[in-house]
Length: 260
Image (cartoon, rainbow, N blue to C red; front, side, top):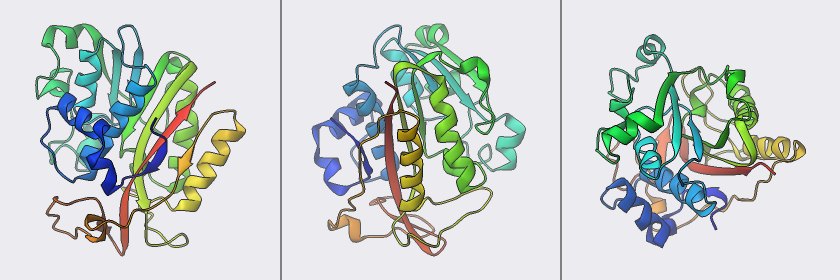
């Protein structure tokens, strides 16, 4: 069963990654974003979350395919993102990464449109101010490289704790974010992007455990041939397991948090 971990080259040869590619109808490639989607799908599948009548809450969903895949399994989904004005201000609209309605969340046709309309609700939510009406209403929550855009390291940490309140007993949260491979001391911290250091993740995990949540994590960074390649701007995207952000090398980390 998957645990919290860094994106690794070996993962791309695992059956769970191939299964995720099939669900997403994505061709195989060494790309960390595809890894994130497959990782989130598998973590929830293994924990029996992808069944009819399960309720899921997605944060910062953009136009990612996970919403439609989860709906295709019969899950009731509340998909959330920034309001249009804020999304345009941050550049998500101009790069075609922001959805306006439920139909935008099913661009690849991964779910029957009628089923999408029945099971999926699209709402605007500021991840720094999660509505209390969501508390205790969901079986799972997820986000794919979203909470590093909340404005600061502290806001990212706060989000991870606050979103756990949305889960029912036995619920599962799966989130991916940026991880600093270059330094555990210095990092990038801007309003539009932060890169979390190991010590930041450790602090999050300690806080979650103190609140009674279960997290198992492996910080091992692989040293495979493709993991020695760092994609630099303008990105070429294959392989794209590690990339240069400012002066730091970053990769993705996946976090799986279970509520007793």
